Length: 379
Ligand SMILES: [Zn+2]
Image (cartoon, rainbow, N blue to C red; front, top):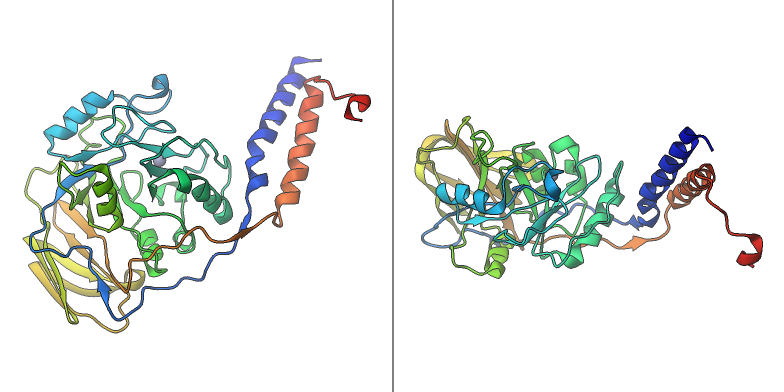
């Protein structure tokens, strides 16, 4: 058996193994987008004094013996973030829960399209993935595999390589939040698409840090949370689920040292929404369905708006020379989320994948010169 045939056989067999997850993907019946509705409103920022705490839950430490991109060990990373005044950090190594991370967390996904998820509070690491192209059915299937083992399931960086398109986030179910701001791609339009479909996805914003000593990486994006330092992990999770989060983007090349505006008060009384910031912003605006502009003011720390019957959600944006600020929206009715949709199996392409996997698997097996079971033993 020539070496190149053995190599080809090995590759074909590997291809058959890598394609086999496609065989297991069922057909999901996605529900139609159903914008937020109702007479009452849900406001995640109820309270007289809003006190914010810094957070970053997307950090890669040195893992897998340096095979993956990550330079420092967890204690070094913690020190660097402590020095910047962060309260909550989580190390999100690829396919591995770092025991030194203050929050049990990992980043799931080893496929070529960077379709990744941040899995908080997981009991175990799920290795199942769909390694090559992923359609909406494949993406839903992976979420269904992660869901039972993940307390808080976050869609990571949708814009990065277009891993999750807006129209997909408007149909997928079973996810809790979206990492809207990430150094590898900000996904505000994708977020609006999810929100417009009536899926309550609070914002998270992260450095996606790989090197804690690189000033261009650290504090490039961050989350501010209404969750005090000594709260339990359960309370942290509840705060994120309830949408008590604001995402920030640094517009400069180095960590922000000046004070920047934060939400001081968000009050909805009758049909009047009043927002007050701690400092004036150059632009302060409200956006609604599909990201449409509802109101905009300049050089102001306050904005007042009369809610219109067609408003489904309202989110606050503020821009200064240093930062962009994006708050989780207030939504009409309940902050509902779609569950994993009902599914049927097999579906249209299952048979096609089965034929492809069998054909290349058998050819690979033969080229490797591996024995086939004798007819007698089959009988
Ligand atoms: Zn990622």
